[in-house]
Each structure stands twice: as C-alpha cells, then as structure tokens.
Length: 187
Image (cartoon, rainbow, N blue to C red; front, side):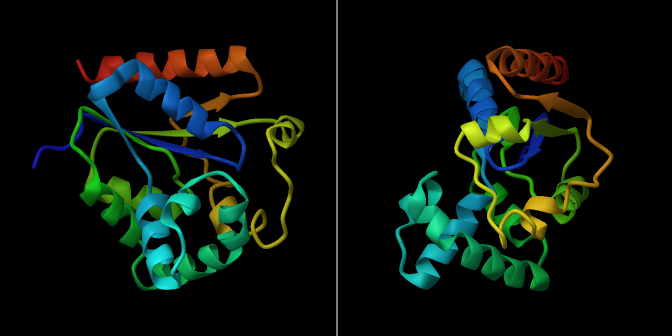
C-alpha cells in the first residue's frame, strides 16, 4: 500500500475554524487530497453501541452536543486500552491520495501515532480569539472544554505551523500558506 506524500495534522479549539480551512484546502486540491476524520470511526462505533444516528453525530448541531460529554468519556475508555484505535480506524477507511488532511487531531497520542506510522507530516494549530469563537457559536461547557479532548495539546510546542483564523483575510492567508507547503512537498 502506498502512503500519502504529505499528511496535514490539524488541531484547534472548538469553533476555531479548522474544518472550514480543511474544506478550503480540499476545494483547491480536489482529488489530490482526502479529509480523514478521526471522529468518523469514533462516532460510528459510538452510534452503533448506543443506537444513535451516526449522520447527526457527524454534524455540528445540538444532537451531537447532547451526546458530546458521554462520547468523550466513552472514547477515553477505548483509548485507555488502545491509544491509536481511532487513528488506525480512520486511516484504514481513507482513500490513498497524495495529501491527507487529518482535520481533528486532539491528543498528543494522536500525533505520536501518526509519527510512529507515517513520514512527511505537517502538524498545524489553528487559533481564533475567544470572542470570534463565541460569534461562531462557541459556548464554554464544563466537562467538554476543560478535558483532555480539548486541552491535551494546549502545551504542545512542536507545531510546524501556527495560524490565526479570526477573519476572512486570516483564513485566506492560512490556506495560501498551507497550499504552498503542501505543493512543495508533493512535487
């Protein structure tokens, strides 16, 4: 099996706009890239085990928020047995393309798993000011915003690129920088 030429590992707080940036990159690179979501197999298994609607869990609405805390706790139990479980499952299901965009890196163990299994990674952190995140629909929630799934990478210092995403100009600049790095590495 051939591996992607570059894997972009994206991290960012809720409502930082990381999914928006990932989708913009996908729109530019088209069939040259695949968005890989660690949350995909996680939510699929959680939905199956709890008789829930998988498609609704993959959305960004109140249905997912209703189950978020329990889903985080459940996934932490799975990860305690096998830290790479969801990363491995997401990659197994992904189409091999020159570029993979992993849109939801949340833990140091996620980064470590990719480092142990792939080369040519680019680890990115997307930032947005709290007031901007609030305007995008963010509301601090105890048990979600103060747990490992949101905070484990707060003290991570080995980002290849850190990008602000507070407005459309910053989003555009971030996408341009990422495309430049990606284009250089897939030549």
